[in-house]
Length: 512
Image 1: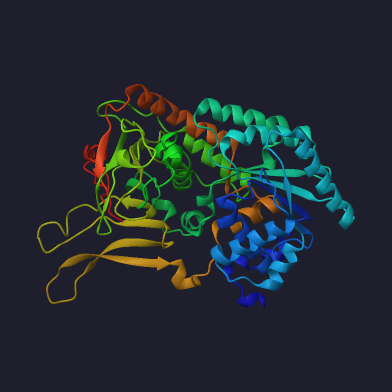
Image 2 (image 1 turned 60 degrees about the vertical axis):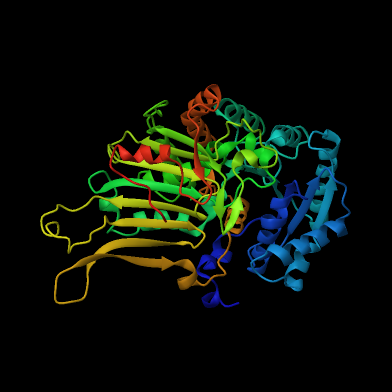
């Protein structure tokens, strides 16, 4: 495919982002994430000629699966979940180098077998490879996997030698500050920080990456990106679905752990951070940590900065839907929140006095993730004396999903002989400009890990800083039980106690 015909995402990638010979080992290879995201990502990277010539895929899991059966499962996953149709020639090149090793995650002998398997690959191609271990498992086995990687010699601290290893870890990175610190301690005992890629797939989404471009590549925004011109910021992560069959998992998680502490805080950090000195991974992540550390401790109790609720039964899509307490596997006295609303204050020069409102919930009016930056209203001197002037505050909204793009609300004159005003919206959609078949987040993130670019991954101190903010909230909620728990009907935009977070500043939640 000619360079001029390739998607803009791919422009120049094969020229300067080449990965060395690589073995990717997926722990949890028979799991849902592997089928839905990881295998299709590998296929599409191969389709775009972004995999190294010597690329090997190894599945690892407790279940014994013959190599040929694993290849068949991978092929079926591509047929069902890939953004492109299966291309037998393209996938055949990867499938020929795809294999499977069975073993327990706490079974040292199985990791020794895995090491022998990788050594056989190196002998076959006549040179050393980098090993990229993707831990796509429940967090309960993160520790055993990391410890066995170290004990078996599969993973070691990179000191400049040709043979080195990297690890990708799926969230959650702990369940509170203490567990996050313990996980980081385990990681540091085996690897250097730059060898670890804590993955948050939201950071691989096009609009999230575009946020930095809009802020720092457009002079109309950066001079206004501060307390002098911005009134407040709202970040919404709303889901239509309920807990479904994941009730057992969700009871141990809740909205704050599942969405706010990780995804939503990453969106906030990119929105609020200071300009980095460069696009180097550490420069970007340094600024993210700085702004997270500037967030003031959350006030708890009545009139505080946090709200929680559970969805109650109601109508969704024309059908009656259960409330959370009626879902399968849910304790009827559960104190697990399906909605969390947060009001944050950032104590630095840029954002002093500008509230940041965060919310995430299940069974809300529609599925949408967006960052909405609302600017201050102009002085009411020219267009405030009459009902003829329908004015709205200027708002710049980045929609992360489902339709990636951004919009700007402006005020314009209504055509006619009389001067009347009306808010108008300017829209930009990625699918309209670039086509709908854009690379998915996991493609970008797997490629970045292979070539050693950590920009879109979470550093250990980022995770700990976020947990430091939210652990007191989780502890207070656990102590309070159901006291202070509100409810909201299925299909609504959330509970009354979340509205109260904004009311003191005369703000209201957007309905994106």
